[in-house]
Image 1 (cartoon, rainbow, N blue to C red):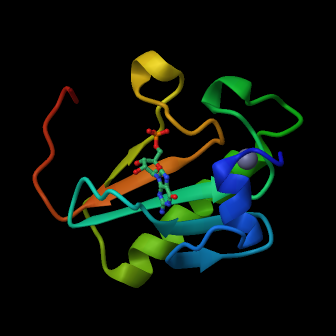
Image 2: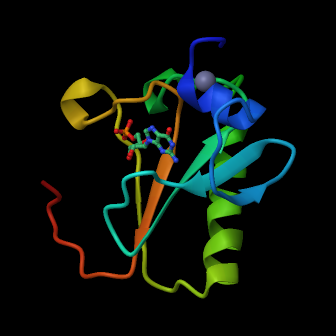
Image 3: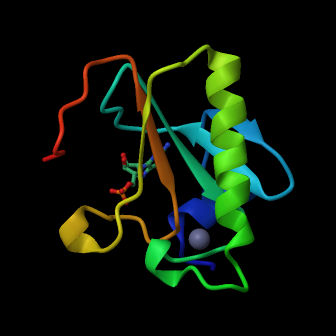
Length: 112
Ligand code: 5GP
Ligand code: ZN
């Protein structure tokens, strides 16, 4: 998607601080971190949100979570939270599926 911020980050048109990359996933640090460690894991395929997952594209979710497991092990993170906001009321501001990974501080539940 030519007007999608995260597609532009994947393409390298907008700079980002890369955490991990493979053929189907890209991960990078959030520009406005909400925890001592806060990065985003996104599929390279443009999918709008969790609400747009179908049997045809659901493999990208597994790839993202495989990456989350790998990255957190590499960073030595044992305790972390994974969040995906779906829709404006839930706090989604970028409409390319992404999983926030937050770590390094106490987390509250329920989230605000
Ligand atoms: P959402 O609000 O959609 O759940 O998450 C979008 C996230 O993308 C936010 O946490 C925001 O800080 C991050 N973000 C927005 N623009 C950029 C950018 O240009 N670079 C990086 N690294 N993160 C961004
Ligand atoms: Zn996109």
